[in-house]
Length: 370
Image (tube, helix red, strand yellow):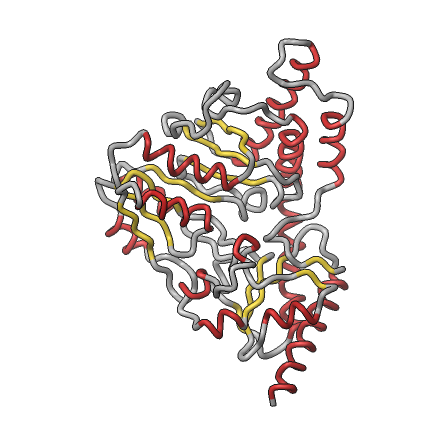
C-alpha cells in the first residue's frame, strides 16, 4: 500500500508511540488523583501542554486539551456566542464541516451567519471581509490551510480586521499546525493530533487571555476549569511529543514536501490541473482534476494506493465537494478531482510510482470512453 492521504490522517511517529507507551501501560493513574502516581500523570499532561503551546507559538494564552479539533471548534464557536451579546458570525464557504455545521446550528438560534465567497483560487477577498465584519460581529472563523485544496488564507489580515470591529477571531489551524508558523492575530486556535503524526482522539483549543469561550461540557472542570472530563495522559503526551517533533523537523519536513510536490506533478505529466491557488498553498496537498475523469472509479481501480476525492468527513455523502463548488467548478469537474496528500514518511520512489499509475489509470478511462 502506498499512502497518499495525509490530509485525512498521518502515520504515527515512532517517537510519539514511545512517548505514549508508559502512560498506556504501567503509568495508568488518573491525573486528577491526589496520589503520587496521579501527580506524575498530571505533570506529564502539563509537559505536553507546554509543548503544544510552544508549537502554536502565540503568547498570552493557554491551551486546553479536547477530544479533537471538531470539539475544539464547536466549543470555540458556540461558547463564544454564549458569552457575547453580539449576534453575527462571519466565516468562509470553504471551511471544514465542523465550522459550517456549527454555523448552521447557530442560525437556528437567531444568529446571523455570513459565509464569505472565495475566488477561483480559493482565497477570500479582504475587501469583502471588511464589508461583512461589523460592530455586531462576535466571531470571525477562517481556517489557515484548507483541508481539501491546501490553500492558505491571510489569517493575520483577517484577525486585524476582526479586532478593528471588536470581534474575536477563530483559526482552524488543523492542517497547518506544526508545518508552518501560526500567524499572529487569532484569539482562538484549534488543532488536532492525528494530522501531525500524533494519536487520534486528542486535539485542543488555544485561547488568548480574555477570549475563553463558555464551557460546553460540565462536570469536574478538570481542564483549566473550562472543559470537564478525565484527561488521558497518553493522548496528551502523544500530542505534545508530535508537536515538539513537528517544530524540530519543520524545515526538513517542508523541504521534503516541496520536493515531493514537484516530483508528483512531473510524474503525473500533462492533462492535470491544480485546484486552487498554485502559489498560496501547502505543498503537501495536491488537489487535481482531469477532464472527464471518474475519480470514484479511479480510486476503486487503484486500491493499493490510498488517496481521496476530498474531505474524509464527507467522503460517504455522495455529494460533490462544497469546497470545489465554491471555486466555481461544476459538479462534473468536482467529481473529476482527486486529492493527493504526502509528507514526512512518503518516499520519493513510491510517490513517483503511484503518480505514474494514477496517470495511466486515468488515461485508460479516456481510452474506454473514446
